[in-house]
Amino acid sequence: MGYVDEVIERVITKNPSEPEFHQAVREVLESLRPVVEKNEEVYRREALLERITEPDRQIKFRVPWVDDQGQVQVNTGYRVQFNNAIGPYKGGLRLHPSVNIGIIKFLGFEQIFKNSLTCLPIGGGKGGSDFDPKGKSDREVMVFCQSFINELYKYIGADEDVPAGDIGTGAREIGYMFGQYKKIRGVYEGVLTGKGLSYGGSLARTEATGYGLLYLTKEMLKSNGIDISGKTICISGSGNVATYAAQKAQQLGAKVVTVSDSNGWVYDPDGIDVAALKEIKEVKRARLTEYKNYRPNSEYHEGRGVWQVKCDIALPCATQNELLLEDAKALVANGCIAVAEGANMPTTLEATKYLQENKILFAPGKAANAGGVATSALEMSQNSERLSWSFEEVDSKLQGIMINIFHNLDDAAKRYGCEGDYVAGANIAGFEKVANAMLAQGVC
Ligand code: NDP
Image (cartoon, rainbow, N blue to C red):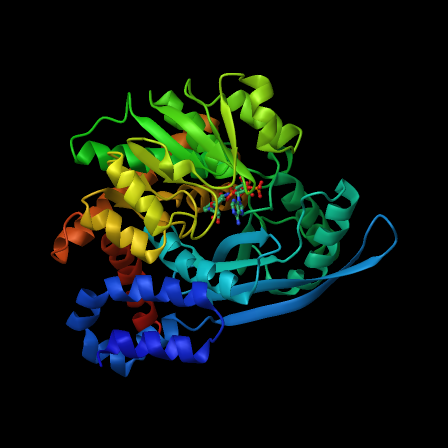
């Protein structure tokens, strides 16, 4: 058995009941085979793959809080500090009932390579809780966030670990967490990113993941001789990533015809009305069933179905494993030319394979959605120098970073003889830098 297969088997045996983590490790390590084969003797001796698949530490803690009825509720909090070979741990906090240690580990593992791809000095981490902010009052969300930080503050810091938002954690939650950290520690530092603009947040951070997704998609299409303007796009999700992906797609001259949430999806043949979407999701915190009130020509459907709609480009922006083999088949049959992942691991391994076999341009999440963390790192820089950059300055740096990421992964794929395989290219480019740093820093 080869080194890669040995390590995959070891990960599965050592971490039972963590299927998402197994999936992420398999996806990364399998595409690293050419690099590993070239360096097998050193990597084996240094146990490099064993070390990179084992988090530096996993923190799991109780989060008690009192609801509006006076009842004590108990959630579980997590922070997985996966790898800090190239910088302080950096990665979001997910608040969703589905959160468990396996999901946080898959996200933290992916984050190592994503952060490395940005070429900024940030290591990989991820955290969150099984708390569901949906349907909770502002007071309940606040006391949950305070309790969460009452424990997490011991492990984070501007030069140590800098969490950010993710599913369920937006500006409101980050604000409550930052306030509590400041109160307990008595220091004003850039310990969290995604902060409000009046207290250290960066302009363009809100838009960054969605905008970055489109900058990378545009560059991938361009380098394959295709213009994004005039293309029809299907987007899933209707949260932070989906909303700003839709906005930038329209600015680039494409037409977005779908969005979705966990209950259903909208088809708008005239193009999604982003202002209406923002009002429904960001202001009213309501469901997509309301969209029809703004756009009578649109259709609302219960359940899944976005990928059955004919489009040129598909941008999954909701959650993991939301684009299945049957969806990939429908996309190919309908003439789709490109898929770029706004969410983390939204496409299953079988679906990815099918899309690639059918010559669909496929940009993996760790490259395509890296604009969020890259702009978080820019927020850290602004906090360190106690300055704020203009929207245009941050946006232009973001564009440069996304274009650079695409060319780095394209070049890595070419160097290892797998031209056009952007999954392998992203994994190789992200891995090489971290591996070299780990080897240089000795056994630790
Ligand atoms: P939000 O919470 O803002 O939005 C998530 C969207 O996905 C909502 O529309 C939500 O619907 C939907 N969704 C969530 N879980 C499910 C599910 N199990 N089934 C179907 N739909 C679901 O999150 P973000 O937009 O921030 O994040 C979306 C994805 O992008 C995640 O994978 C995240 O890890 C990734 N990402 C986010 C970054 C960021 O900067 N925000 C950076 C990089 C990656 P509903 O409202 O019904 O729950």
